[in-house]
Length: 52
Image 1 (tube, helix red, strand yellow):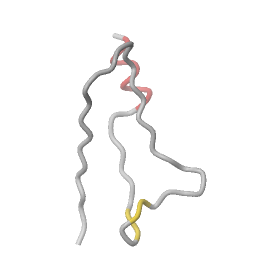
Image 2 (cartoon, rainbow, N blue to C red):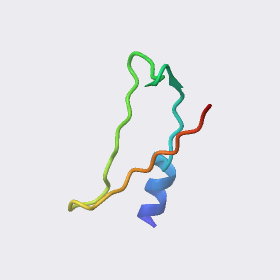
Image 3 (tube, helix red, strand yellow):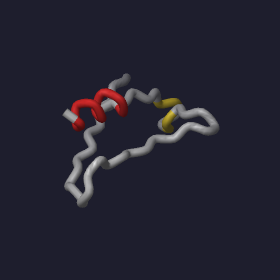
């Protein structure tokens, strides 16, 4: 149950537009990865790039 609640609150995917080959983030925006485990765990980050 706690894992489902964390997933619902923190989100599991993110879409960020690219402008000129760079992430289109605002001045105070950033991308953070939070790990909800007591011990280190192997993670995989997957990037799907769509465009022309």
